[in-house]
Length: 434
Ligand SMILES: CC(C)(COP(=O)(O)OP(=O)(O)OC[C@H]1O[C@@H](n2cnc3c(N)ncnc32)[C@H](O)[C@@H]1OP(=O)(O)O)[C@@H](O)C(=O)NCCC(=O)NCCS
Image (cartoon, rainbow, N blue to C red; front, side, top):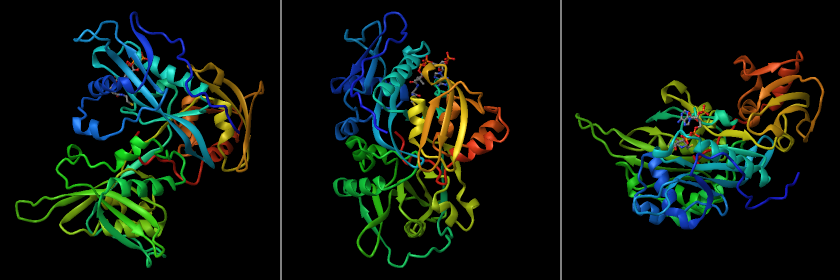
């Protein structure tokens, strides 16, 4: 399926409180965007970070809402802003899909709770559809925020704390692999990280195509170190010199009152392309002198490491919500992904914000493709677009959502079949927070 992308759709007519006005934002608004974002997130971006980082604003995608009254210097004051990333190849079951990654959502604390976020999300959804991006994805600062706009939590990730010497099961193929430990050189390792990161095939995976985001992951800003050493990288290299895994990490040095070393290895991000590389990488990181533990970054709930652990309890898995998905163009989104088994089901979908998605849709699909048509037939399964978003990447089953009373079965047997079809053998995850 192809779409004709519209690079810069006009702003839709959305309700704003009196006196507020919405415009698109560009590079010229960088300081204003950083100002409202740091107000919203209660964190300053140190000047050296702002200076070192290219700004990840993509052309035509920044949108702001200006306050009725000017700022202290008499110039217009930005009350809220958001942007999105054009993920051209966001991972979905069976392939990839153009996806709008909603990001930089911020409302100044002085202007909150009067509908500015609602106006921005609505704007984002309309422009996403106009661009021919069938779904939107995001990371939620707080899980309470986005369900009301039809986003469903589509992936769970986990983090582990691995004690030093954690026992790992053996896997074949580790013999020819070696670990290389280096200080991060942003240019050289930026390219290496981009290559390995870009080779991952998994629902929910967002390739880091925006150069500013690619630069950020290998940036070693002193203000980000929080007491750790400068950024390091561990790579796993095979006989032929190909990199099969990496971990960006930094150690902390700590000695307890009895003069025992209690350092920690903090992993910023890791990617392993196969089981042998995972075994070698984590074996090396859990065997560093003077360290007592390794804190992993984001891992999928089916990451090979979890299955290599001899005793998973010692690693204290800590799950959290990962990427959220909003189905924006229902027929396009459902027809684009693949289904684990053949399915022929009529879904009755409600969608309060985008009524063109609401109604009855017959989905016929399987591993080879799918088609979706609007019908008047009796529904087999009924659900809200939020639950459709949750199930879209194959990581949350329709059966589980039905168990929670959020999906209803009208035809006996239809739920089990649809639930299996929407599932996928690989758990979804996005390995970096956008
Ligand atoms: C979260 C944030 C964007 C909301 O902006 P806002 O303009 O106050 O939101 P709105 O007034 O449009 O609220 C829309 C609805 O969401 C609810 N809501 C907004 N923020 C919420 C939150 N943090 N928790 C729970 N509910 C929230 C509102 O109560 C309102 O509910 P209603 O539809 O039942 O009336 C803003 O408070 C903010 O910038 N927070 C800090 C940064 C952040 O979390 N950004 C989001 C990044 S993913």
